[in-house]
View 1: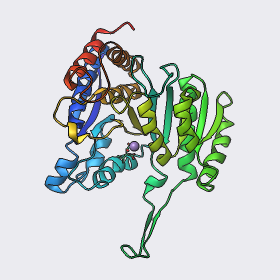
View 2: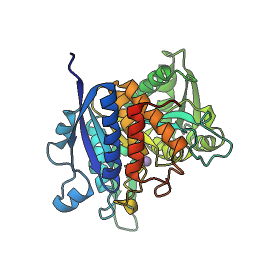
View 3: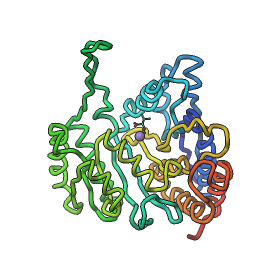
View 4: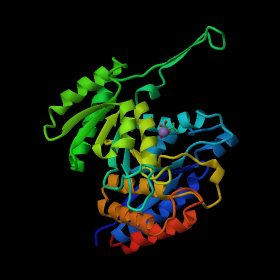
Length: 360
Ligand code: IPM
Ligand code: MN
């Protein structure tokens, strides 16, 4: 008999409710693995606020190279109320994204049936698009500095770094993704060409140049401010969106709320040639920690994206169907404490439906 395929997964449960949602995610991943005949071996990393407060370490020496030995990374949440904002985010989350060159942040915005959306008169047929966010450059690259810090003449400069190389590889990924998705076959560049005339000139020129190689993909452009309006007014216009790091960060929180909130929104930090990392988009939600009330579906959906990325498409579809079933037939709300079920009960439901298979 052929040896079962084993995937090596680095797990970083992280802070706050991270460990609780990751526990449910692993439960569901194991259910899928069992049914579809592959194995997952997990290595746990205790990186996060607690470790930092005890040891002063964010990522220990050699830590990034340890991650490189895995097929994928599964992350809970980073952010601790007793640690100055920015330290853990920059030294753990952003450092992994940058050092592993995860240059795409892939964020699907999909409203499942029965899930409440704040957008009146819109349903699952209207809210189904994907944001491709550049993940290694822009304002996140860390360019800038202070002049005369702490004086009345202080200057603070924060630079947006956009390289032809970085922009082009992101755009190419988005065109390929749009083709493979095969829905409306429309790629919308979201930017700010009317004001940020250097960065967005580069993006726009590169976009239309690369587009020539994809005659089957329709191209569109929207300013980022107008995009926010259209997410609310006409979300059905979108198929695949490609944008820079900062705009992608901002519009995907809006995307998350129209798909039902942080309880369900997941994303992948992708290096198509390297090791990718999957995570719920929401934070560590410290006030719900340890209460068994947080919604694990975002982490579960991140796990689903991870399996899809590893090539286990069937297993990913089984998890998605289980999530749809649980949203439609069980949960009262996707908000923490209002689901009508505890965190672990939601995990059990999804795991069982994943194992059994569901008819929708
Ligand atoms: C996200 C988060 C991060 C980001 C923070 C925590 C650094 O908001 O993943 O969207 O800004 O990218
Ligand atoms: Mn964000």
